[in-house]
Image (cartoon, rainbow, N blue to C red; front, side):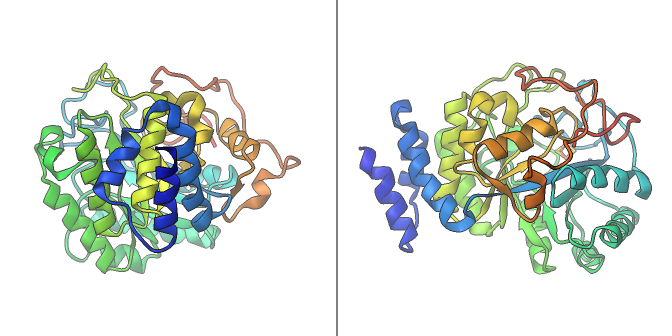
Length: 365
Ligand code: SF4
């Protein structure tokens, strides 16, 4: 049985593709086979990305107050999670937050706003922020994540210098209406199409642990493959108190690694990003996850705290990885990332973010 995963990697490396049965076999591999799964998927990771890790940094431009009802989201209508809520950051504040992430080693800044979708004025704001950010940091990659797009908005973002657009499908089409009722799966797919046809790099991913079946996880991954997403954030549900998913714990660290490996087998050359829930679900297997995934978010998430950015960087260094485009940041002689009183060890508890964007406290970057 063990050879199966290596054979699968051989087949993919010589131009073949994983089938849905292969993907299911990865998800259902015996725990004792975990290292074989990782070694085989890791060959694909090394083939396409070597020992690099792409480091991304989130800036939550507008937090909470969303009229949509995504059940998993702490910012949704009806969520009682005690998160930071604020309307648009100023361009200066957005730049300050983005700059902290870039100094911490990130090469891509993800500018995110809550809400169903941007107004044309919102697009103007993000365009101005992008132009200002690129003026200061010409090499930065900017990804916008603003919700459902209307005609012409993707082109406007592209013209302002935005490189990528994120809009997650989140789950399988067959499960979508169980997790949100205020928009459809097709709405989401349509926005990814708009971003793509405007020349923005499509970023779309999923959230595991929403009550989906193995088959639905596979369905979601094959949908992302069909959408040709360049980058695929794999989130693991963070079950905020005060949301419909509070106390929902469906994942184990080993399961999370298998999900990442399955994503790698199905989309071998896509950027597989370990996204929200990395610390609480992969726990001590975070570094193992990076043997198959090749991308992370540095520091904090939109509304919750990640482990210290310094710990993220050390984890990469310990595993022999280098940050894509910012190799100097891993120089042990380089200035350490800012530390501060909110710092704490990797944790299982969900800590609401109280630093960075929307606060006076230093960012975790
Ligand atoms: S995921 Fe986005 S659209 Fe859905 S509730 Fe959260 S902020 Fe609103």
